[in-house]
Figure 1 (cartoon, rainbow, N blue to C red):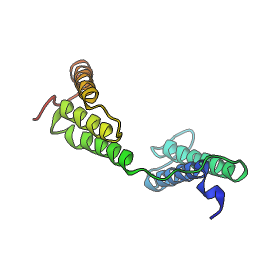
Figure 2 (figure 1 turned 120 degrees about the vertical axis):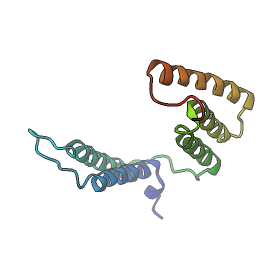
Figure 3 (figure 1 turned 180 degrees about the horizontal axis):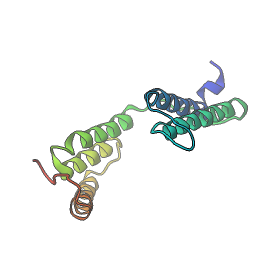
Length: 148
């Protein structure tokens, strides 16, 4: 396998191209319009093209410049962060913002083997209180504090 395929720049460029292509595919049915009368697909189309162009430029740079290689994927951080995000998404509607915040922080804390769970508990209480005050009280978003 050629060395440039293992470089971080090449992988990042391919990721940007993939996101840009996904934007083009997902927004294909939106009317683009013209510059004077922009349709709802005008900006997504333009941003998707820019992502693809920048992705190609970044990936091409990996062909000519030496850079760091991609490391082996570590499962624990990936699973912990994903679990925290999924827990938040699943709990915010029915469990409320307090429980959703606790789930997100627990998942993120589980991602690191050096986590001090006492500090994570303090962070959970502070972040949940801050979230409840900001989003529910001040911004008055229709998010329950606790179970419905």
